[in-house]
Image: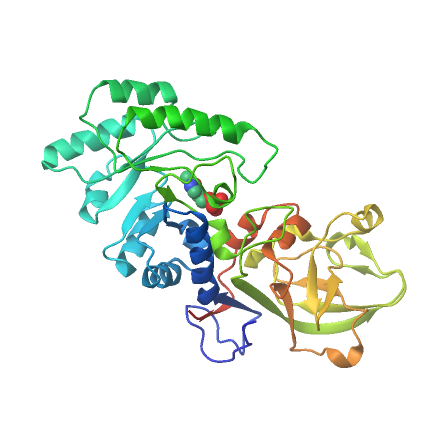
Length: 385
Ligand SMILES: *Cc1c(COP(=O)(O)O)cnc(C)c1O
């Protein structure tokens, strides 16, 4: 487990000695996770999806570490993210998942960024540009096999292919709707539909698997795997033991300890009532730091035994008391011996066994949202590889 550090942070943020919370990103674990996924992908190459600031962990740091480990292909969502990735990975293949914003072909081609073309309109704009420029920089073609979100329909892919060998993407891809749910037969139907599309573009490398797809027996490995979440420690096989190493540790500082008498209510709107005298630690993080407000605890939740947020305090899992505020969270630390905690100590919100999937579930959301929400007020440290 990463040590607490008091030296200067590795990225814009407060000095750790003043910070309300410390975020540690273990780049060694990130690289180890990429290697696990690469091994699972078999003969396929393994890319890294680093959109949304590498799922909140830091895009430049992630791309640099993964490049050094041998990763050659990256996926981002936005052009700005691609530009940031290009600065640290001058030779990498960089795909932009959200496709072509009208009028941005020049920016894309200028930096050798590859749009993931998701409609016939985008294909037409890209081809017109390539014609004018007299060259054909690469692009991926995204075919929709069930998400109904981005990508050509299977019929449109047929139309495009029927035009004959003019358009040859660098990569043919589709995206799985529910790869983490082994009981959902949508995956098998998507795989079948995509096999049909692949026959239209013989010889074009193909990609289908996200993190969970890499662990799904019905999903072929094809030429390129595209994991994101699992790289950052998320569990690609929900309900089974997580094969990935944790990457993120988030600790927040206790700024006050107090005893609330029996019947005292804690937090906005008094949603949580002390049953007997309770010791409350107020910690310096809140929803403004990206910690979900939906992790608030209340009397109603306690009675229903419904999931609520928790923190590890001196090694014990302690439930939140009341609402998550903008800058503060109140934690019921009554079970922790008084001598073991004091003002200024840190509690753990993510890590040390409290993994991001668990944190997401306690907030009624998914670990993806917890990660990508990681705030900008933390003092960040990068360790490894
Ligand atoms: C985000 C994304 C991925 C990565 O998915 P994970 O579930 O995070 O592994 C792969 N492909 C596409 C098209 C995506 O948008």
